[in-house]
Length: 192
Image (cartoon, rainbow, N blue to C red):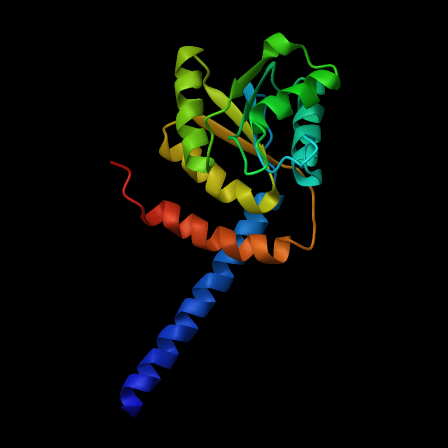
């Protein structure tokens, strides 16, 4: 029995080390922007407030995408998200936010079927193929970048760059560990 407990202890410690190492890597990768001139900026959705406005987290993602668009990093923008529990279409709210900031409607493509990161990546792949796009710049929260880039690369989008929204909040204490689990889920899941 002692031998089994000792093995379990070592396995637990090994798992804990792997978890902490992955969390550190996710944060490190997420904070290292790989911004390059691209064909399109893809802004990933997040919560919409009960009044129909973007949450502070989502607003910061949109502001970062707008900043990159203004700097002529890419001529097009794709906003992607689903209908949240608040009842709003995230992508439509995102589009309106950008239009209100002065982005022409005709440069924004809306993907309202992005119910999760992988679904967004699948939808973006179709848009990319239809428009002969070869490079995308993904904008999201720093802790979400690793999983998002992985999902886009898994969907064979040719060149994927990233930019963090540089938004930090207390909720990150929960979000980073959640992303570790989400990242391993994406790595281990069956994609057939």
